[in-house]
Amino acid sequence: MPNVIAINAQASQSIIAAQATSDDMLLESIADGNRTSMHILYCRHNVRVYRFILRIVRDATTAEDLVSQVFLDVWRTAGQFQGRSQVSTWLLSIARFKALTAMRQRRFEDIDQDDVRQIPDDAETPETSLDRNDTSAILRACVQKLSPAHREIINLVYYHEKSVEEVGQIIGIPQSTVKTRMFYARKQLADLLKGAGVDRFAA
Image (cartoon, rainbow, N blue to C red):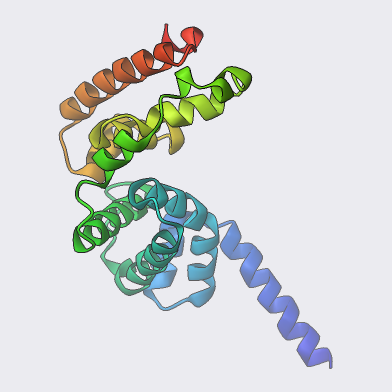
C-alpha cells in the first residue's frame, strides 16, 4: 500500500510539473514519447483548435474528427517542430490545412457562398428588433456574412488573438497581404454592423 501511495504521489508531481512546462518543452518531451506531456498539450489547446476548425468546416462532428487528426499529427511529428513560431500558431496551421483538405474532399468549395445566401437579413426581422441588446449575437452573424478570406482574418486576429506575423504564418501569405485583408475585413464588417443597426461598432 505505501508503494501505491508513493507511485500515485510521483505521478501527481509529474503532472503538476508538466502543467508548469512551456509548450515548446512539452513538444520536446512529446518527441521523446512522453504521453503525459501529450495529454497536457491537448488539454491546453484542444478547445481553441476545435473552435478554429469549426468556424471553417461548420460541422461539429467533422471538427471533432479533425481535432483528433491534428493532435495525432503532433504526436507523430513533434520532433520536426523547429520553434520558428509559437506552438499555438503551429497547431492552427496544421488545423487549417486539415480543415481545408476535408472541405475539398467533401466538395464543399462553395459552402461559404451558399451559407451567406441562406442567412436572413437579421436587421429586417422582428426578432432582431427584440434582441437588439444582444450585440454579440449580431456581431457573430455579421462575421459569418464576410467573405471566407476576410472571415478567416477576423477569426485569427480577434478570436485567437494572433499577430499579423502569426496570421501570415498560419495562412501562408505575406504580412502586407494580411494587413490589406484586415483593412477590408474591418471595413466590410463595419458596413454590415451599421446595416444591422449597431452604429457604435460600425463607427
